[in-house]
Image (tube, rainbow, N blue to C red; front, top):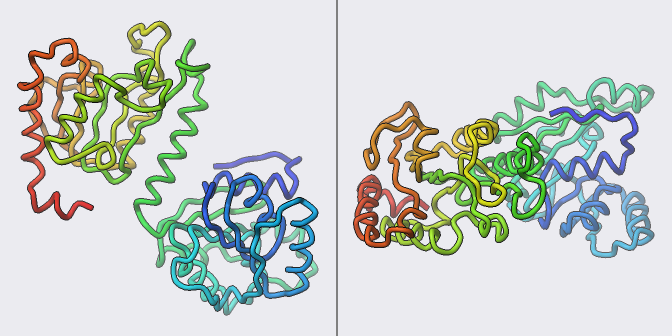
Length: 365
């Protein structure tokens, strides 16, 4: 991902880094006292601890924070290569252009310490060769060898790389679950900002609604598109059809928090009209990415649109695809209109239940 704008100043750049890093409402350790701590506390509602090895730099940072009216940052004297904090003290740890200030022989310790005290992820931002030359050409600091950095990170975690101006951003995840949640949030931004389809995603109730549920779900349900109430209340399968879905989930010992539910089209259509082929096609990359991220064992298409999307042939028949199985079922809204079929419909869920041996379910979480 490249963001290019020559007019980005240092504060805007820091804010953009925090936006990309998804740190809202987190406990955050900021390495190297500076403006980023103020922005994180004020604009992202983070509970920030900002550290530096220099008491003078900490005093300056404290004064700057008070001038900005931010008085809820903890400023502490710490050596980032030997932190005093316990393991997983902070949700996220961020090093903004601090790594090149660390002696080369201590950079490995620095990275490992950041990783140790983080619960979810670490963010390392530093200048690329061009940016380093512009700022530190006459200094004794040594620029970051990003090949060595990536080798170090490969031993610790999976990571994503972003670039803004002359900065490389590494977001490193301690758990696969956190990485998946991060990637789904990235997709949600793309979905929310999509304007490919005329009439759609412009205002409530025609706004988009991303998939919901467990990022590590073994079961993924794919329906048609959000109804009006779903769009308004930001909940897939709201009220009637949702109650039917919940009955089915309960029958197989699952719930909305343990599965993943999404749609082939992410937007509610004006006046409840049927979704069009173009709209489904425009949303196709989003659904493909959801499947790629979650990697479910079984996908359950709900209703005809999803049935066709997955090129199904028979209803209520489990089939094997390359990376997952598919079990197409009627949409819960159809059952709402034909309540005499409810018991028979719920019995069809037993195929899913039998696909989850009890022992396997017990160890799922």
